[in-house]
Image (cartoon, rainbow, N blue to C red):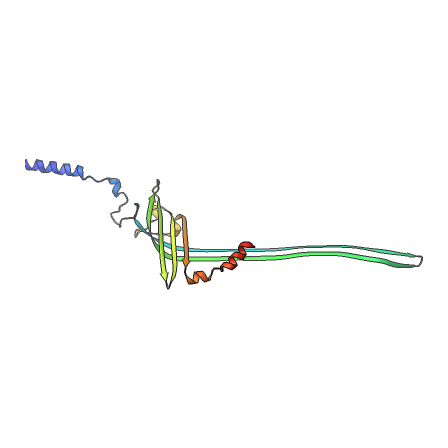
Amino acid sequence: MIKKVLIAALVLSSAVFAQDMRQNSFSSLFSDLKANRIGDAITIIVVESSQASNNAETSTGRTSDLGFDIAGGSGASSATIGSANIGSKNSFQGSGTTKQSGMIKTKISATIDSVLENGNLYLRGNKKITINGEEQTISIKGIVRTSDINSDNSVYSYNISEAVIQMTGKGLIGDSQEPGWLTKFFHWIF
C-alpha cells in the first residue's frame, strides 16, 4: 500500500512540476547558457574602423578674340586708318580633397531589449566614462542573431545588423574644439 501511494505521489509530482522542453532548447550540455531572453546581458566587442576619401578637380577655360582693321588709301600709298581689338579670356581651376577616418575599439555590456518574431535579438547598451572632467558616452543598438553570440555571451559589433554606434564627449577639450557663439552666429547669417 505504501508503494502504491509513493508511486502515485511521484506521478502527480512529475505532472505538477513538469518542464517545458522549449524552455531548455537554447541550453547546451557542453557549454554555458547563451543569452536569449529579454534582460539577459551580452558583451559587445566594438571593433569598428572606417576610412573615406574623395578627390575632385575641375578646370575650365574660354578664350575669345574679336578684331577688325580699317585701311584706306589712294594709289600707291595706303594707310591704316584705324585698328581695334577686343579680347576676352576666362579660366577657372578648382580642386578639393576630403579625407576622413575613424576607429573605435571598446567593449560594452548591453542587454536584450526585445526578441523579434524570427528569434533575432534587439540589443541596447550604453557606456559612460569620465576622466579628469572629460565625459565620453558610447551607445550601441542593433539586431543580432542568436547564432552570432559566442559561448561567453559576447558578440562582435560587425555581426550586429542595423547597428547604430554613437560616441559623444563633453568637457573642456570638447568645448574648446567647437567654434564660439559669435562664429556660429556669423556662419548662421552668411
